[in-house]
Each structure stands twice: as C-alpha cells, then as structure tokens.
Image (cartoon, helix red, strand yellow):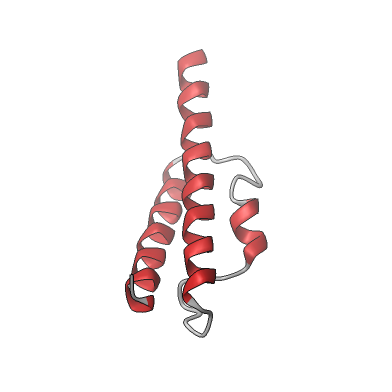
Length: 76
C-alpha cells in the first residue's frame, strides 16, 4: 500500500475516534496507547511503517473502547 493511502486511512480512522469521543462517554486514557505514539495523520513526513503502526494501534484502542462501552451497556 502506498504511503498516501495509509495517510488517508489514518485520517479516516482518526475521524472515527473523534466521532466515538463526541457521542460516547469514553474513559480517560482510552486512547493512551495511540496518543503515546504521537503520530497524527497530518504528519506526512513520517514513513509508511510509522503510519501503519499508528493505524493498527488506533484500531486496537477503538475496538477496546467499543467493547468496554458495549459491556457497560449490557450491565445496565
């Protein structure tokens, strides 16, 4: 996959994160792993590997957040 495509995917997934954070009560630190990497989709000077790492980390954090939210909703 080309770097430009990875950057676009990174940006789209970041929008999903923003949507979740706006609509749901996500606990503090839910995206700490991604935030620690410190690479945003707009930082195109990073190489493909770094963007790919950021994408997968963000996807994992989103998945874990959604699992926590669904578990919390089942308990209610």
